[in-house]
Image (cartoon, rainbow, N blue to C red; front, top):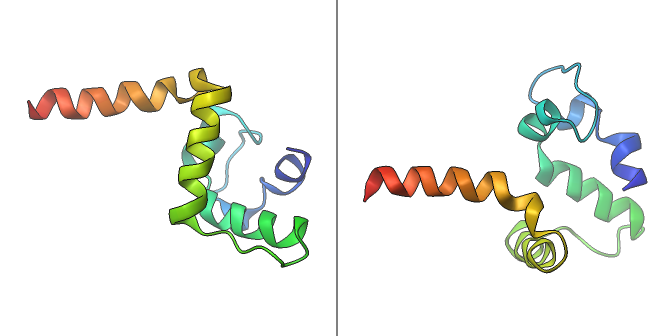
Length: 87
């Protein structure tokens, strides 16, 4: 978490400049997470492990479901509204 706090505010990871701090709503909505994770994996593993979105995003989601499911509540609510409109 410290690496994300220290580096996540970089313009490299944001679609537009923000006043929100790392972890706040505006940042969460605008951060380019895949780029952030690519650099995080590279730096923390000394480039021994490459972030693979199709693999690691599933693993991260499963970890969140097991350990911090409430953090996915907003996403679940959004998905429900999308599918409710389609049914």
